[in-house]
Amino acid sequence: MSDFAIFSGNSNPDLAQKICAYLKCSLGGAKIKRFSDGEVQIEIRENVRLKDVFVVQSTCPPVNDNLVELLLMIDAFKRSSARRITAVVPYYGYARQDKKVAPRVPISAKLVADLLTVAGANRLITMDLHAGQIQGFFSIPVDNLFAAPVTIGYLKRHFDHDAVIISPDAGGAERARAIAKRLNAGLAIVDKRRDVPNQAKAMAVIGDVKDKIAIILDDMVDTAGTLTEAVAALIDHGAREVHACCTHAVLSGPAVERIQASRIDTLIVTDTIPLNDNALSCGKIRVLSIAELVGEAIIRSHTGESVTSLFV
Image 1 (cartoon, helix red, strand yellow):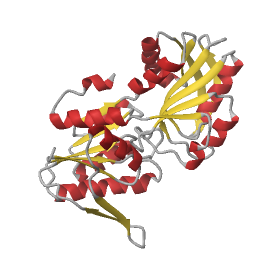
Image 2 (cartoon, helix red, strand yellow):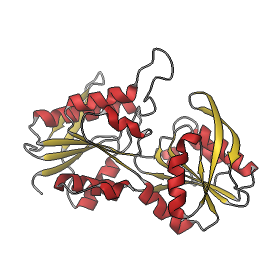
Image 3 (spheres, rainbow, N blue to C red):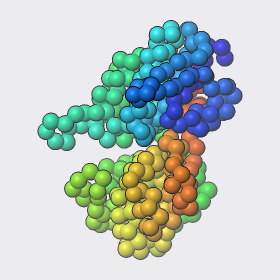
């Protein structure tokens, strides 16, 4: 399709290549360099005039560098007379700062939405937003995809009827309930207390997990503090095995070491964020690709077909 192009920044080139392989197209040429002081320099190396352009770029670590790359690429396409620019952001950074939780703090998720819009994005495709209402921060259309179809397929192939879906906190109960219903599995919730950011203490398990295969479901794993506390609580309550599924494997700080030292059997993640060498060497981590799901959303967005079936 001559009126269609996919480009990628430096955040997740492997995912962009997989998306292009699914769509049977080549990745657009873009040169991304740094000046000696660290400023990002962008040069689009092919004609995009009147094209439908999709920019694949997760705002994963280094978050600020990848965000600036995305903003500058969008601006470059706008100034090159692209017909429409869609930011494909599988992992939307700053999403956890979506409300004022203390005096004199920013609502960073809203600011990033404004930056993307002002830069020139006409549409956003993202996946498993930390809070669904972030879609309302945008004045442009937002397609918030879910990794559930990929995750459910894996769980159906690997786990039997003894599985219990676990929400690691009360806020994730709705998501866990929906997955449990589709798997015909039980449901339980880990009650936790968090006093400071990135530190959590699991307190109690609500539901029956004794002699069951417990599968913790969350949208992201950052430092893995919440996850490992939940694993310990489930083991203490008699779970036979403990596994976990998450969409975004941030895995910052001591996350991988905590996972390796815990009694978790496997952590199933997707490739919205590329894993570093430390995480790739961890034998407990399994990676599922969301390239086909995102690729299908891209092609349907381009052709004007419905993407509703991809939301379930």
